[in-house]
Length: 160
Image 1 (cartoon, rainbow, N blue to C red):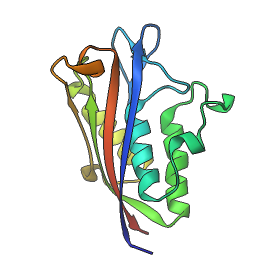
Image 2: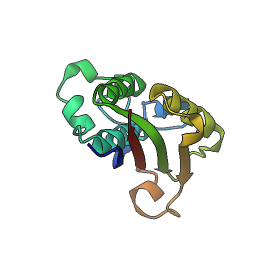
Image 3: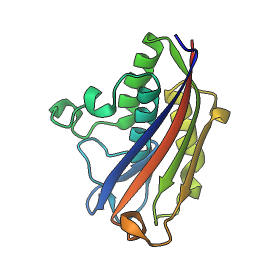
Image 4: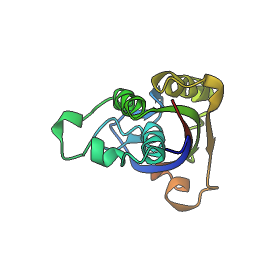
């Protein structure tokens, strides 16, 4: 078995009225929230997919299908804890996580440290090895127009 793996995750959700905006387990005050079967935490979803991909364990759709009512409204950090157990059981530990949130608004800087902390904690990672950043798309595309939020995440695993 190779002792080092890299995975990439991507997720996107539409912004709608009447839902909370949750990113990295942090509820962020905003006029709109993300639409999804669970809490639609697009950041945590992209990170989970990056980690599952690195371990060759499928994706979140395989583990938490949106056809299963058990996951309706689910807290994505609880789902992430399940992913952490899968990684551990497969002999992997998180080496690092780097994620980019693509959103025109709201401004996310005040919430970044708590997002990092939440992700580091749930994946038992060194907080200094977890990075979350945000960018806009200069009002271009669906994220730039405020229709949705997207996240790219890259993660590395090392054999435990």
